[in-house]
Every structure is written in structure tokens, then in C-alpha cells.
Image (cartoon, rainbow, N blue to C red):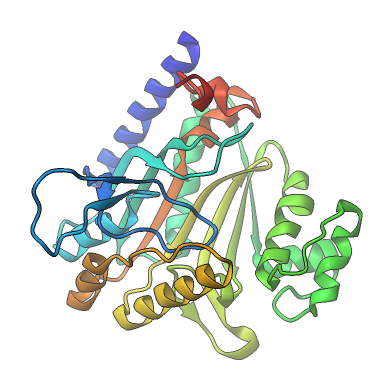
Length: 317
């Protein structure tokens, strides 16, 4: 137990030194907010405030699933390059590799795109793995070329039945899965397991339908979401974007999330109006990334059990 706690402390020190050397400011933002994460594949915890509030203020508050919205508001206020290293919370995610509360490192770089930030993220992970004397190779794929190499089809244009075929032996019986759901299953069930154990695998430029908070570049079949994911072996560590700055487009994406949630029978969640107001003021050109600390620690320790890198896992908390 002490060895994993010591490794975590050393990792935090390494992260802070890495960021300080690059002039990236450490900040703290609220854990509770009036707005929630509307993403249908992420569920949020909520709580209620019992004290006095203005009549228009909601009593139900949402525990953050990442510090993203608050960090972007700081960027609008002129804080500049910044990061937060802190706890986040996701309901329903508990198991061998997941804990409902975990630690996330998230940071933003003004004037950068996702290519530049992907390189810096790789640099940080290499610095972390040096703490356990593990050198890493780097492997880089575009999303399209990764799927073409593995399956022989273009993931942007292949018909749905072609996406399902490589998963025929996995017994997936779900008629309501979307095209993106099947692409995600191909990644988690077929591709990740083959990523080299001693390498950082960077996947960049995703289908436009998987843009989340990223910009889209190009048109038609050439359009891509300016997004990257970074893997260490078969573990996804980080997800980054060349950030969307258009407030109207962001509102439309939130509203689309709400429609998808209702179609799935999920609760519609309050959109973060503070973020939209900040975007209307003007978010500077930037790239941002979120990195899971427990996933990185699991790679450093060489374990598939998140409990091995926590002081107390959820069932013992």
C-alpha cells in the first residue's frame, strides 16, 4: 500500500514540475455546479443544497465529471495556459478498471492545436514512466488508417453491417446501437488489445460524429473531428481536442445530447449556461486534454486492477 501511495505522490510532483517548467498555471475549480454533463454515455452524481439561495438558483447541484467547463471559463477570463489535478465523479462506473471517484489531470494550451498537445501529452507520459524505468516507443495512427489497416474498410463510410462483422464472435445482441457505438466496440474489443505493451499509441482525427467538444475540419468524406486519444498498451490514458469556440454550435451539441438522452429513456440534464455565456464572450483558440491518473498509475505499477493504485476502492470507501 505505501509503495503505491508513494508512487502517486511522486507522479503528482512530476506533473507539477512538468507544468511549471512550461508556464502552465495550476488552478482549482468547483466540484459542484448548477450545470451537468449532458453526454449520454456519462452519468453524473447530484446532491441538494439545503441553505438559503436566491429564488432562481437551483438547489440540485451536479458533481463534476471533469473540470472542463470551469477551466474554459477561466480561459475566457484571461488566465492563460492552466491545468487542474483533482477528483472527478461518474455514476455507474465501478469495476476492475473503474471507480466512481477518480483523479483527472486536465490542461489547456492557448494558440495550440490537437497535434501539438498530443505531443506534449506523450512527453508527460514518458516523463511519468521514467519514474519506473520504463522507456516507451511512439506509434501514431489516424483513426481512418487504424481501422483500414485492421479491418480493410473505411470507418467513416463503411456500411453498418461491415462494422458489425468483426464483432460477430463477441455475442453482442443490441439492435439499438448507433454507428458510433459499433465503432467504439471495435476499438475496445478488437483494436486496443493489439496495441504494443511498451508503446504510446496515438490515434488522431476522429469521425465528425465523434466530435464531442472538438472542432471539425474539412468537408464531406474528408471531414474529421480534431481530436486525439492516447493509449499506453491497451489502456486509454488521455482524450484531447482542438477546442470548439463557437457558442451557438456548442449549444446545439448540448441540445442534441439532451434529445439522445430522452430517446434512450435517460433523464434530461441542465445545460451549463455559465459555459455558454463564456463562449459567447469569446474562448481563445486553444487545445485541451484530460488524462486519467489512475489509468497512468495502473500502467506504471503493471496492474489491471484500479484498486491496486487507490488508498481505498469504492467497496471499501
